[in-house]
Amino acid sequence: MTGPRRPGPTGRKAGRIRAWAELLRVSALFSVPGDALAGAAAVGLRPGRGTAYAVGASLCLYEAGMALNDWADREEDAVDRPHRPLPSGRIAPAAALGAACSLTAAGLALASRAGRPALTAAAALAGTVWAYDLRLKHTPAAPAAMAVARALDLVLGAAATGPVPRRAPAVLRVAAPAGALAVHTYAVTAVSRHEAQGGSTLVPLGALAATSALGAVTAHRALRKPRGASALVPLLPTALYAGTAAAPLLHAALNPSPPLTQRAVGAGIRAMIPLQAALAARAGAVGTGIGVLGLAPLARTLARKVSAT
Image (cartoon, rainbow, N blue to C red):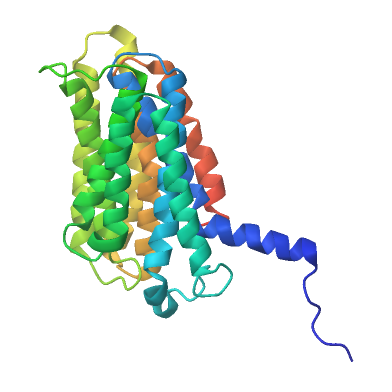
């Protein structure tokens, strides 16, 4: 008789990679680049080197938030989600905290390469992320904090690409899409507060109403612009946005169990991509919108292997 076979070096390495992929929610990463690209479109410029730095900074700060989130929640996860990398012992808490610090520093360094306005936006974003994970997550201010973080991520892209408008109504070119991302993020974050225990019907219904209204407003604003057939381009990602977010939220409202609530949150994260594409296309950056929309199937495929929540 022989005992159970221990995993070899290759198996241990694969398991460690899997653990870090779960900790960092890598499937949700595809929802990040569209923020900066929509910000570039908002200021009426093509993405450039500064935009690339903004995308890199956004990815680093997003992943820093993921690592810090699990570090801060390690005791709670030991009860509600013992399979997560930290409570299961696959990643040490110190390693997660170190990753959060290193990724934050890397994000700020990348933003600094795009100029002082971009660094200012990145610093505000980093501060919001750390405040959310360490203090605000379990308070009524949590959805608002996450909404501010997404809005700042778009502002980061705008500031890194070119001068952000400072006079009304030009400032609305940045404020309007940033506000749209904030509304969506607020709704998804409100639902995510119930994903471990479930039990909420009103919150998914409220999120469904908010996302439906956001989709309708986005489509209406696109149709108001007299650009001929090109005005119809934002309608496809807008329809995909509504279709991605609506059905899971409705299911979570009808049956507010933890699995359906988690599914609604995951769909809400993925729905960010067609929303970003619609905002970019509505600003006239049709190519950017198509490029962002191409991230959606990649996010959906990877989400089958690594949960985004």
